[in-house]
Amino acid sequence: MKITKSKLAEIVKEIVQEEKAEYEKFFRAMLKKHGVSSPAELSDEEKKKFFNQVDAEYKAKHEGNAFGAAVTAAKEKGEDEFEVGGKTYKVESVVNEDANMNKKVKQLLDKNLKELTKGKPNHQFAVMHILMGALSDANFHSEAKQVAKLFPRAKYEGDPMAAKDVEEYYHYELGPDVANICKWDGKDIVDAIGFYVSMTIGRPVGEKVEKLVESVNEVRTVSKPIKVDDDTMVQIVGDNKGFRELTAALNPKTGKPIQKFGYERGNEIADSKEELIKKLQKKYGKSIKFESVNESAGCGCGCGCGSVNEGFYKSIMSNGGRNLFFAMVNDKTDEVKTIDAKTWLSSSLMDNASKHSKERVVKAILRNQKQFNKKVEFNMWAKKNRPNFKETMEYFFKNGFINNITNKGIKVYESKEEAVFEGRAFVAAAKKAKEEGKTEFEFNGKKYPVTLKD
Image (cartoon, rainbow, N blue to C red; front, side, top):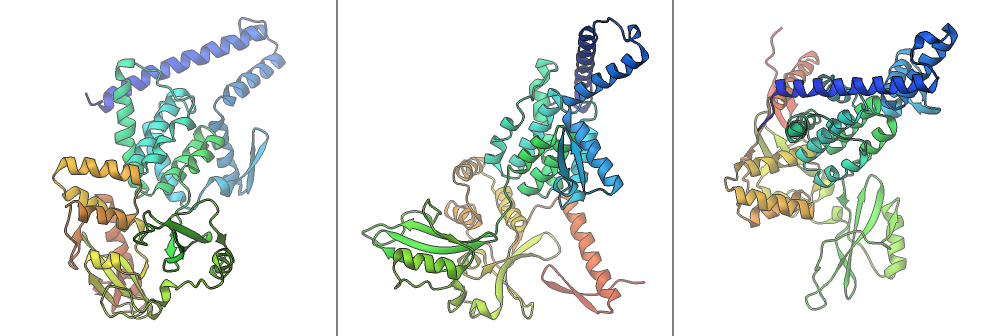
């Protein structure tokens, strides 16, 4: 039975009463510790010390409240650092770059968890399942599995008969709401909830949450694969951390790779491509030469675009509405040419498509698949293999989800929030062009006339 908000409110009230009873128990224990049955038996000076001690020791169990208060105070005073529990923290290390996103997530959780005492088992239980639900909704399933170990004190202490309903409410209702605010970006999800956790439970736990998903590194292929010995092929790739060697085992009979290229222990890494090539030549022999992808004769799509050095790249673009297109773009002239998905995937042009656009394409394909068993099989495959976008699309082609996506694009699912965001961005671009005295402006790869009136 699905839990209603009114029923949830009743359950939360019961939990709050239990937490009040726990505080009273703690308070009585402190009186006993001081050898009295009532604060009235203490002198004024002793009362002051007693209540300060009660406050300090009880708050120690709710470090996040003290941490949040310290952050807020430091920000209001314009200070760069603050201290909690004998440790010094920098304000900028707690408040990440997207403060607006953090604020939205915190407002959502503050509103829905306001009756729960921050840092207590019930509150941690709620946050834990909301984080699990958000990551799962964004397809970060392996990371979602690691959440429980970060909240060892998480425990539901309400009506046992309602435990499953409460858990599902946090996981399947509030979790996806958080994912939506963060545009289904795993790193943004853990950063936003990590911020909330730091403010309400404690910075140590908040830091662990933020590290659940590492920063996304856009990996680019730098060289074509080459055979270095009878059973190994090597390829160079780069990302924002540098360059590294990837290897794949060869079938001795066919001479073709029998596995995906991957990073193995012992593979070389370097800060520059030139440095890495020197290491690999020392490792495999100076006669080995790597052909750069950027030196290839063309993009491989048969479009006549010439070499990558001519300034072409591939992207996934919107028409300002609900369609996404696979496209090649000339970054010198901004000329856009739409192509079909298979041609796009086989092209060796630099991939500038955003992760969000790729996720929207995948979600649209899954949404259009009417056979439930196919969706289940895909989810099981994706969970096991953690495929990239190209591998996912190849799975769709191979298993009959789609034959191809033509140059007319694909209609994607768009939430109301996304539509509003897109619309506002379009109007903002038009206003900026008008202010600059232009007669047309560009939005999502297409040009539009300025029609705004004064």
